Image 1: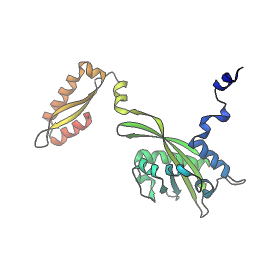
Image 2: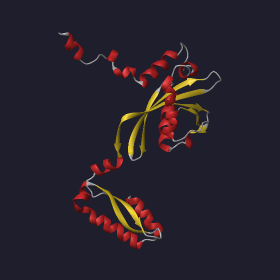
Image 3: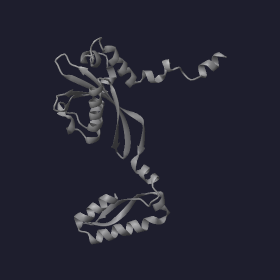
Length: 228
């Protein structure tokens, strides 16, 4: 077999590019810090000193017994959470972020091992998926500290386009057109699915207009919101 053929083959698992990713590196760092006879490594050995750029992707949580609290967050995590405050309860965070962090941290504490969860969040109409890796450690001052690594995967998709593509029904996205008094007077078609594009949208728009005429201002504001 020629050298060219050897090089063109599938790389061995030992030298797989995945082993140099952030998550494998952090798992190996956690494992290397685990001392014989101890169930968890020390916080200082895992989270201090050599994280480099990964520090921006780390949230530090403390288990207080009555609930988890966010002690510190890196800059990337702050942007993900849309929150830069420290020392706040987990339930003060956006629900999608809090759910993923809670799942990862709780499972890591129960297993006494790193735990990888996924967070699915809608940002600007796009469904984004994030890896959340929880690394449980013990603190020299007592108690348990959990470092949670957060980073977005490459794949993302448009939620509205996905809904339109998944149904054969005539689906429309409508925006209210308001008069000078601020009352909705008509509806504008912002986006339409394939079935609606084929001509089924007239019935939906007619229904929306009937609702606009029959409801009061507050009611047909809500109707417009449902269609939008």
